[in-house]
Length: 362
Image (cartoon, rainbow, N blue to C red; front, side, top):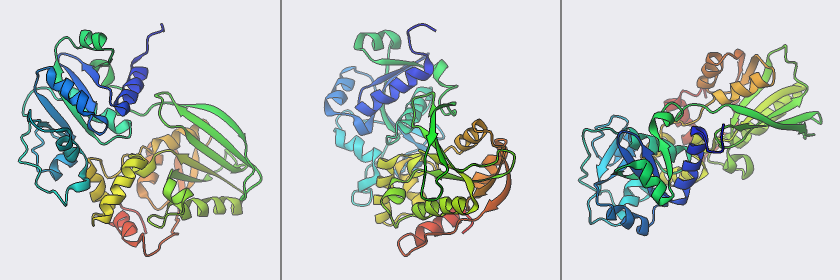
């Protein structure tokens, strides 16, 4: 390998650019310049218009459905952007915060036909950058040359397509002894994905036997619940109950995965909370934002378990999807251990939605 970045490193660079509001160029038979709406400035919008091409707003199918925009591309839509609209119009289509107060945003015209591969890749990159999945796009000629002339990151679609949406391999970084309240014999392992994403952690409680099914918990990071004691979810009580159970039994392993807000990130999770205050449930809020019900990848947990030498678990969960994922990923689930804690008047409706729409056994 030379000094130039490979495709995984190029995609990491592209995510950073999108978060900063810097355009990227997705190159292929047709090259497209794309900017995340969330970080787009009026000055850059004007510069895009100065290129002279047609501008479209790429949105996921869920967001397009909310806006009553035809999704001719199946899982996404390319909405034509009129030449006279201001930045605020684009932001209102991307962010549902004012949907109820300003419901009439259309009629919207969706582009039909042509290749939407670059636009779909732009949305995938916005998601993985923890941004709203909405990108302003316009075609450019000679994409590689255009990117070089303007100092922009060029992403070759032929190389990116097999990588986008796949799970990045995890590499162990360090482990160290960690005495805890539940067990003085504790150890923390840090794993880092090769794509530059968030690190994930494994916490050993006691000294689990690798030859026996280990009491394990797949826990997605929840800043509001785990740290702030939020009453809107049951995450904090589940975390503490799982650790207490492991401490009482003398051994266990907690897999702490940095997939905040069902994988959409803390900022988008707060956007979902704001929508819940308007009367939408947690699934409806995610859809209005343009996300799936759940964007997490629980295979991360099975990969960490295998790396640490575990092959079978007694899984602390109310979520059958986690059990199915473990089994499909080569980790035997010898027992599902229920974890029903933390219900209160603030999260009762949230828990009912998890049971009704996500299949949680509550």
